[in-house]
Length: 120
Image 1 (spheres, helix red, strand yellow):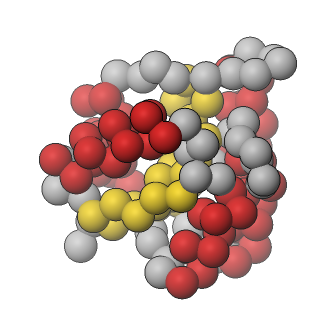
Image 2: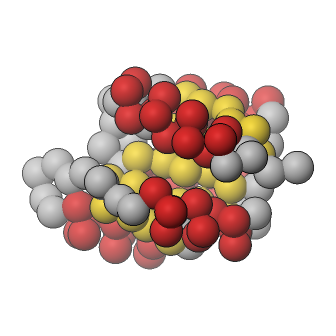
């Protein structure tokens, strides 16, 4: 079964990404921030987590580190549109912390789904 968790505080983006992934055959769990995402993951672990970096409650870097403590084998895709720094800076750090792949928003959906297919 292809099941993923999408964590992003932007409701419109999270809903759009979830809909595209469902259309591609994925079962999608979602959460509006890292704190809630970790709750969802602990209740129903998935093989791949997609997380935004800049979020309230618990931002993406903390979320990545905690997910890796819970399950070192979880595969994480980091996504970011930026913040105070450039998106590339955040995404490089996310990969250092354990994300296996990163994408800068907006990204090519076909490339994203192809990458996800390889991870699942």
